Image (tube, rainbow, N blue to C red; front, side, top):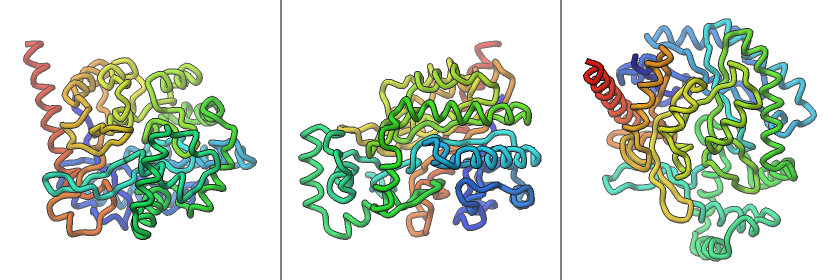
Length: 392
């Protein structure tokens, strides 16, 4: 039993075409109706039209990434009931199209965050990078969030000030736009003034409050998902710790285990992202696959290289701090044990070769992800062959 190989596709305007993805060896795409406003219903007709377009290219669409959760659900705002009804209607329409795996996240406001979208590697390729010092420079000196200095060590406050002073106006603007303008797959973008106002809407919530709101969300939608035979798979926080004073509650194995204990519904599942979880050295990736495996409905396989002071960058898929071989051994054992092929995709590939001169979505150029998919495919087949040899 091998994984189902997919790539993320951002719809008809994606610079990477469906034909490109098919030629990479993937058999499907994971995608979303990115043109639909956050909180609005995904209509039956729009879903079926997108599915037909994908199937006409010889590919499958079995996984949604992502059906966004509105911030009024995350902070239990006044539109909560209305938005829950819209969400379950979208789930119903997706199920009617035969789509059974629905990815979501519960990160307030920003979704995934990076501070450099083109960090040059020694081989000339470019990678996504996160640097806490740059976050602090923006937070303290551009956003000017009240009380922000309490979230950083004195040494980081000093380093951020020096970094900000050394930046040109263009560098400051680039940093601001990189953080808050919205990366591929993000549902929202802001100006700094809007972002500060939105942060204030979360004031006093805290991690436990956010977790309670996620449990309330799942208790409302999981009965519908269970009836439909749909699994909701939560993507972990990226990065897996609070930033800008905003809580995050899906960062560790303990967080996920607590979520499953609170809402044991079959539809309450996990998108296991080795990159997001792998930013934290205290997350045991192979062990998490082994212990959480029955709940894993979707895999993001990528690796990060951790650096000093909370920084990290996207590493080649088989390098960096993720022991991908050990993860793959556990994934293969899981699929054999439960008798199902888990959809996967390579993630956040390097911008490289011909893509260096093309307009691409950051982290989602073709060649870097195609390299990652090929490496992961070969690794999995090697693991499977080794398992057969041991049995024989």
